[in-house]
Amino acid sequence: MTRLILLKEDYGDTGLYLTNLENNQLEIILKQMLFNDENGVGEGPEDIAKRFYPDNVLTCLGDTQSSETDIITELNYKCVAECSYYGFCEVVNNECNK
Image: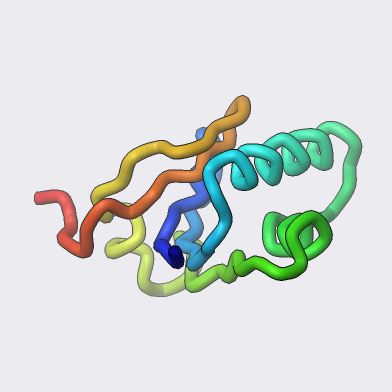
């Protein structure tokens, strides 16, 4: 099942992704991202996903650094995987918070 998810950082940006990864796989990616941060490895979530799960999809559609930030930050979502200051949240519908 393909779904929209947000990659949220407590002290940073939010990214909108398309994925077919399961929640436990997303948590493994977050743990690797944290490990990379602690060890100065410059590998993003898409690179980690390709390395760990080459037959699956994790594609960034946009982030809060792009010009269309309002829609990303106003989506309804629920957390499905988290690790320290990172979290993946599933977009629960296509309506924005009001």
